[in-house]
Amino acid sequence: PDISNLVSVKIDNVSYELREEDLREAFEKFGDVGDVYIPKERGSYRARGFAFVRYHSREHAEAAVSAMHETELGGRHIRAAIAERGRPEGGYQANNNR
Image (cartoon, rainbow, N blue to C red; front, side):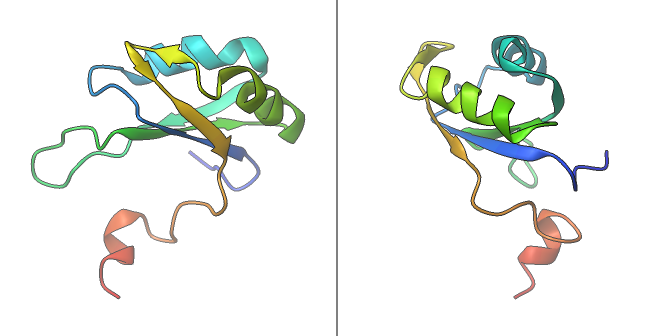
């Protein structure tokens, strides 16, 4: 999906069992979620322990961070923050060629 106009919230310490639907359900109460992305390990396709929830407005993203930072989700205490930078151009693989 086109994520160029979305504000990303990075969530650290995400349970490996959580699915995109679980994150969407937990975070959509703070605003209109445009995308949920859980990076996977290349080869094994296992979750890497962090995720991004992307909102259509910065206000909603900030409300989610304020409410969800240092809370429990899926049996783990998560950390939430506005992502400093977006996904690399061309996806994850392009970033590894540096």
